[in-house]
Image 1: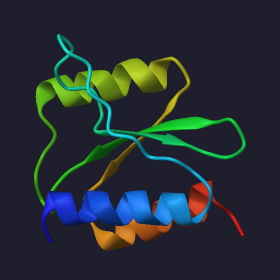
Image 2 (image 1 turned 120 degrees about the vertical axis):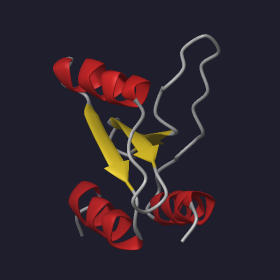
Image 3 (image 1 turned 120 degrees about the horizontal axis):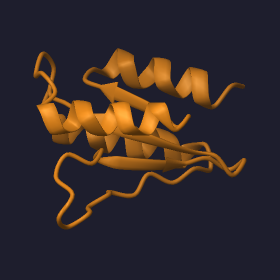
Length: 93
């Protein structure tokens, strides 16, 4: 499955549950996560989308470290199952 299809699935599943998942671009800051997931409870989560089996680039890894060191949630999602697991964890029934 292509990264773009996984990204559409993530956005659809987040929005079904009342959240938002806008694309994040930050000129001059290469490697920022692809999406900021905004939950209805006021929490934000950063998500890097990857095609199945594709590794993170060094700048993406760096951003993940910077975010998690500051106590932010950061996920790397590269499969349908990864998205299902993310939704189950962050949007409990």
